[in-house]
Length: 198
Image (cartoon, rainbow, N blue to C red; front, top):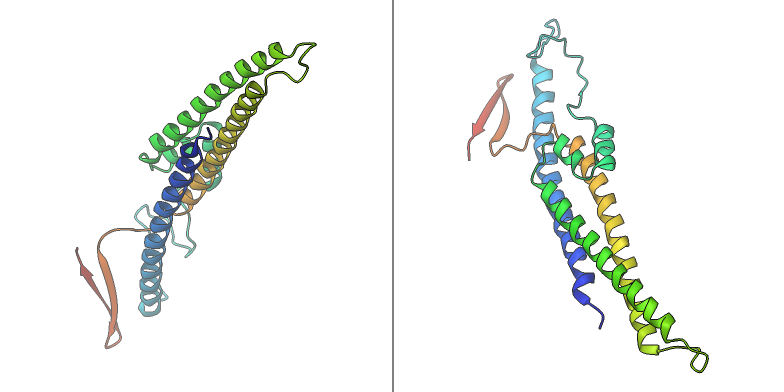
């Protein structure tokens, strides 16, 4: 009678989302390391008397400033799940979050309806001659109550994953994950960059 798919589907989806995020984090951290090494080598061989300016003409203080605010992304996702992913321009995650969330909400409502129905039938089966009522109805009532509570828990976990994903995605928004491999080399005191396009 226990629906095993109801237990394993969220676990599989959670593992898939975590593995996708982990691949993104690994690729972005490798790109960050390549870029930071290049920046350090460039700083070593550049003149100290020159003030560097970015494309907007603002003085470069050497401090990294994030484009996306992690706090804002979390607040957007807290108000409306998926809004933080929209803010971070991770549009492909929005239908996944809404689809899984919709499925969990559907299961909560469906199992609650069955629970209320079997609860009323069980209460009506209790008579003065049989105060314990129909045990089959009691078992079904408890089964659907447990299923409802289980999907409420899954919905809460999905909500937390939505918040964490928005936070991490905002932190990693500025990392370069292009397919180009950049190599830096020092040749006779000069920094030489090699670019390989894949």
